[in-house]
Structure formats: C-alpha cells, structure tokens
Image (cartoon, rainbow, N blue to C red; front, side):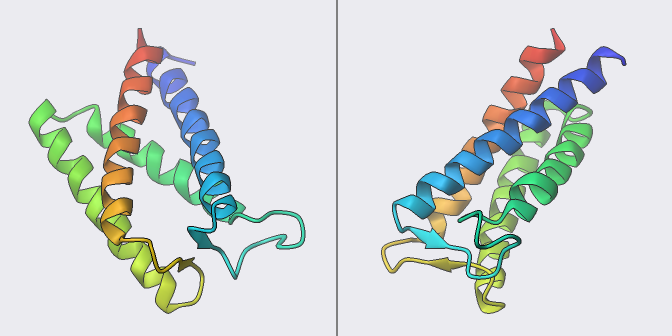
Length: 128
C-alpha cells in the first residue's frame, strides 16, 4: 500500500472514531438525537452515518483536497461545512435527526469546518 493510501485510510479511521465519539457526547448531553437509526436498541447514535457515510465523504474530501492549492482547499472545507449544515436541516425534515431547542445550525457549520481542518492535518501527519 502506498503512503498516500495509508494516510487516507488512517485519516478516515480517525474521522470515524472522532465522529462516533462526538455524536455520543452530543447525544449524551441531549443536544440532539437520532430517532431513526440502525440497531437502535444497541446504539444511541446513527452508526450508518459514523461508520459508512462519514468515512466515505472523508475519503472523497481527502482525494480532492490533496490536489488543491491551500486557499482552494479552505474554500472546499467551508463549502462542505455549509453543505453539512444544510444536510442536517434536511435530515431533520425527514425525521432522521432532532436537535434540542438550544442548538443553532451555525454550530454544525463551524464544527464541520474545524473537523475537516483537523482531518486534513491528521492526513498530512500520517503522510510524512
């Protein structure tokens, strides 16, 4: 396995791990819930998101981001953060996700931007 693929795999695993624990923390603090989720009697978080969708999106992000100029990469990260905020609101309309009254969707946008910046740094760390 080449170094780039190793770095992507390790960063994707890290993203899945961090995403799962962030969801566990926020669900535990009653900031949001997942009324529709696989294995609901076992997991309080949506493992389909943290084990499948988040790693897939992270891998695609890293494959694209590695080819971009730093400024373009930052714009991509902000764009994905905005899309994630819109995606959460859409998920709420389908009943897949419920936020507490104290939640503001700007938290999600900012959180995904920070998350992706961290994932990018982790990828770069594993690449060396």
